Amino acid sequence: MEPVLDTGTTAWLLVSTALVFIMIPGLAFFYGGMNRSKSVLNMLMMVIASTFVVGILWIAYGYSMAYGSTTGNFVGSFTDYFGVTQAISVGGDGFPPMVDVAFQAMFACLTVGLIAGAVADRMKFGAWLIFAGVWASLVYFPVAHWVWGDGWIGQLNIGGAEVIDFAGGTAVHINAGAAALVLVIVLGKRLGWPRMPMRPHNLTMVMLGAGLLWFGWFGFNAGSAYAADGVAALAATNTLVATCGGGLAWLLVERLRDGHATSLGAASGIVAGLVAITPACANVTPLVAVLIGAVAGVLCALAVTLKYRLGYDDSFDVVGVHLVGGLVGTLMLGFVATDVFGDGASVGLFAGGGFSLLTVQAIAAGGVLIYSFVIAGIVALVLKAVMGIRVSAEDETSGVDLALHAENAYDIVESGGGGAFAGIGKGSIDREDG
Image 1 (tube, rainbow, N blue to C red):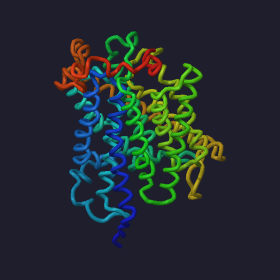
Image 2: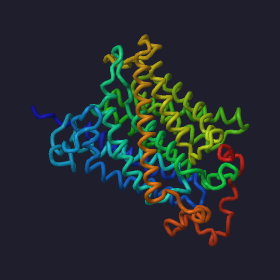
Image 3: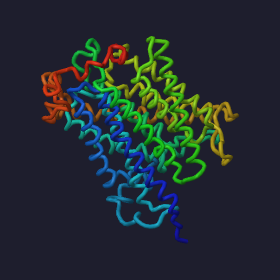
Image 4: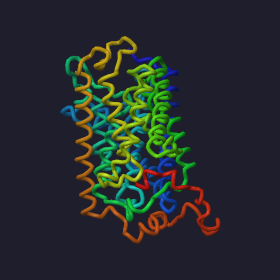
């Protein structure tokens, strides 16, 4: 029998696709505001241009690798949907399959863009675009198949417990965070870091970006229900309240540690809460979602200072927020997951499920982390040997906007010099002061 297309479900997925898309410029603004003024355009370009690359690759073969018939539980067939042929343009289970192509493309593009925040001010633009395309092909597309296709993570079952990753704790956040960590190690530190303060040039832009990310994340999480139903409603509610918990917890840490709560901390807490609830949003109650967000807010606020102790220059804390936040949400499910809808979902330790769910969650998180770290490191080292991945010291000092793009974000001379940025005080960026 021909599947019946549900116009309500189709409409919700189309709206969710647009919501997730708005996260991409939101991410660009979030990172761009944290940049110094001489490099903000480059950051906007890194996020947007990587979307150009990954969007095309997704249509060419990425969707097929992620959702094609499995090959050795590792990757989907390249030929099932190569070039997104007419084979998937009609029919479907309640919605046209082409809607899924567009919806999941947004996840692929955003995940790659997340990595860009770690390498601000110093990576060659061409090298970044090549890295983005190769990493997406070798890492994101296969890992998406592991988690959401028919790959090995989706097939893990220990004691009846199966991996829970509703919207991308492993495939998106742990994946991107691990790649960011090894990329900054290969790339090296910014000139003057950490001795020289490298403060955000526009905290208003940071808050705008965080707001757009929060707005779009409702499509990211609730859209992953693939229906306008109770699961989507729970995911949306948890997306709201976990983020509130993350924001408040980050501000509390700042107040106790530094003596003041900052707008940068609020924006970072928003993202930390969103990251942590992503894998868990359909498998916990709202009060537990607040707890997950709060734990992520505390741990991520503490984790962003590790780069000073360990010596890796993660410019905008992709590791501290996305890798750590992704691990928090993924692993906490092993303790707090419940069968909210009574449909036999795996439950955590506190709901009587023992350690089985925690075990499969840890295996999934560790497998993605190690794979992404290793492959991203190999790609970065090859690019470094073949073409170089870092701009010259002269270009880094003068600013990559002018050196790489022949543009400036602001006409400083016309606006009367540096006065436009005089309002940024020392207290607003403690973690970049080291």
